Image (cartoon, rainbow, N blue to C red; front, side, top):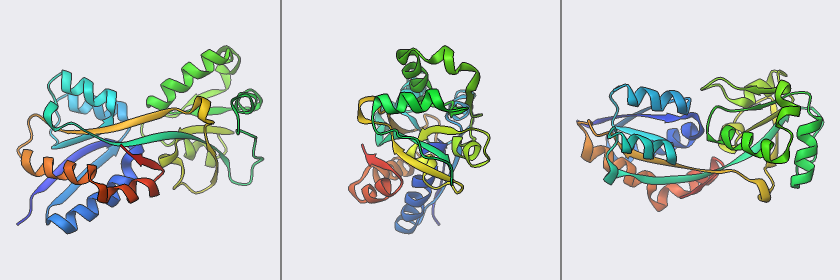
Length: 229
């Protein structure tokens, strides 16, 4: 009888993990159950001592959980590099975002904007500061609650311009993905994984992470808007 491997991840990797874990289940005979929530909430739950076998989060969050001894340092692997894209509601005008200047103009022209609570949201806030527009757009900027995709706010017409990981935008209905951020200001987050220190399935969990990092997982990662790490 197979082993059940439990885990928690941020929303950015939800779709790719679903596909890859299904493939791993077929290959290994084990069952994988990974819950995807907002990354901030996921880290808090691990810190609070909730039991999982594996954790998949932004690299800095994984490193923090290793430092606090919640995760096993030797099991740590980088899985994907994930860039940020921009979306508008389906059928809405499509502003030019093809250059840094064009993107800045689109941000200033938007009646409302949304970013996530995740690492991309933090970096976008820094970009808006660097552009000198943070105060100007402050009242128009909506931060999506943890676990709520920015694209859902865009699809409902609650915000005009949405910024989030491409992997979180590309599968949503009711929006048009304008494209990635221009190369000069692209924000790339590395998502990593590690086995929980208290896991009773250390070996099985480690084999899952080996599969998730393997070359045979590369095509699925690209299909979900990410690059293998």
